[in-house]
Amino acid sequence: MSCYVALDGPDGCGKSTQAAALVSWLDAEGADVLHVREPGSTPVGEALRGLLLSPETGELQPISEALLFSAARAELMHRVVRQIGRAHV
Image 1: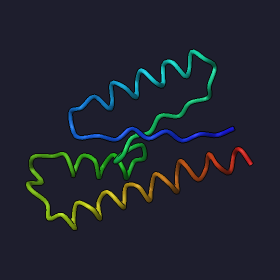
Image 2: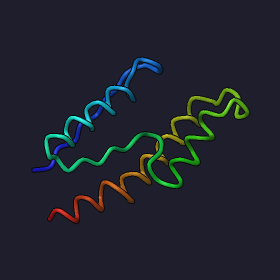
Image 3: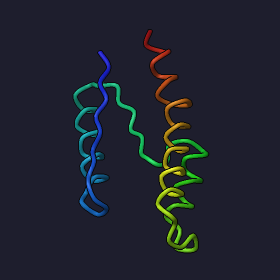
């Protein structure tokens, strides 16, 4: 059985810490776990993450930020999530 878990919250609230703890626990319980992050987890996603988080980028227009996040998510869905689904069919 496959399961997706998403951790959401504001910047700096401890999502990465909680995700690492959850992955460690699930792994110790014998679960097959793949941890991804948004934006990121693909070459394009990581490049976009760098752009989004870089102080050199400055303050982006909200639509620009939303489109960059959407592009990163599209890559993640196509290159990672979709491939996992195909492998488990």
